Image (cartoon, rainbow, N blue to C red; front, side):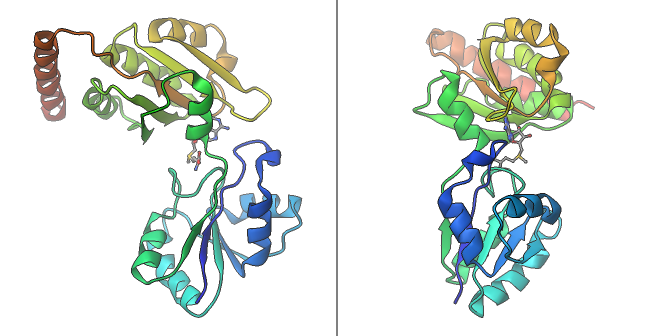
Amino acid sequence: IGQFFIVPTPIGNLGDMTQRAIDTLNFVDLIAAEDTRHTGKLLQQFMIKTPMMALHDHNEQQKASVLIGQLKQGVNVALVSDAGTPLINDPGYHIVKQCHEEGIRVVPLPGACAAITALSGAGLPSDKFCYEGFLPAKSKARQSALLEVSEESRTLIYYESPHRILETLEDMQAIFGAERYIVIARELTKIWETIHGAPVCELLAWIKADANRQRGEFVVLVDGAKKNDTAQDSIFSKEVLRTLNLLMKELP
Ligand code: SAM
């Protein structure tokens, strides 16, 4: 019976490919890749000649049974995504779940992940954090999602695309308040890597001041809510937030 390897790849800097990732991609019989063209370039860099198959969000459930069948016949398979750790806002969950159900060994390799890289360099509390992935694309749904975590005391970690970074920061200012401290980690491990933190009102002014600051890939980290409200205040605000959230879901 084959094994299913989860192999992280660099998020921008090829030097972050681990020796074990290279060895594993050479060792397996088949690489399941989110985008075979993209991964093809990476394999070329490291002179890896293992065959690939496409496994993306749209065909994962359908391809899962094929892969499980191959694994059962002794084929060793590695999963890679375009960048970073598979399954972290990338395909793989359905297959990993099925592997466990079918008694197939899953071997996850440690490696690059934008969320963890950002957290380690952000200067925000890192002992407890919530990984929230991408916020909804539409403003109303996004505000509603932010309202749900507005009292969360742990550090919040979001992924965001360059064309929504301004809107998202505006919504965070509206929901969390102008003074909430936010850090953006942009283009991690790349030439234009920037880590900048400030109260969200100042951060918005800073990012608007130069269009280059709105380019590239972003991790947005939000300092947790502080518990210095009086008990009465916080009960009151919780009630207001709950009502607001219900209203926002009902309104057209
Ligand atoms: N699986 C990946 C990981 O482990 O980080 C994440 C994949 S997700 C589809 C892509 C998002 O991750 C981007 O939109 C961005 O928010 C974030 N990201 C990826 N690479 C990044 C980088 N070099 N700097 C900052 N954020 C990055």
